[in-house]
Amino acid sequence: MTTSSSGGSGHPVKQRAPSPPAAAPPRSERVYPETVDGIDALPRVTSAADVKAHDGALVRVTGTYVERDVRMRADPPPVHLGHVAIKLADGSAVAFLTAWSKDGPRPVAEIERLAGTQVDAVGTIFALGIPRPQGGNAAAEPTLVDIKALRPAR
Image (cartoon, rainbow, N blue to C red; front, side, top):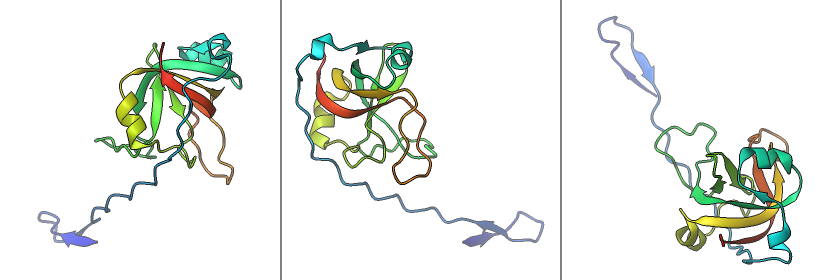
């Protein structure tokens, strides 16, 4: 901590030194196939209403592949460490894997290839996310897990 003048009151004011930026977690090397049997027959999720309607089901989520800031206190500017989401047509978003999953931070090549594009992702959707296996807080947000396929939308 450092101290500085209080501007005339005579009492020093304690200020915290800025924290160094956190090291980025290792990126996943897992590459998902572009298709899976029956992909076109799966329920298609394109809105928050669809997420709720298919909670816990195997689905095909269609939307825009975007990077997301997973920090607990996401003060601007955003910090992108490889976590992504699929932004749906109504503006809501579905996290692509949990923030704590070892495969959560996606490979740089995948992000460079898909960022800003429409994608189809097949997996199991949970409207309120899933709890951390080791306990503790987890974001209560729509999350796609157990990914089976990821491809540019067709």
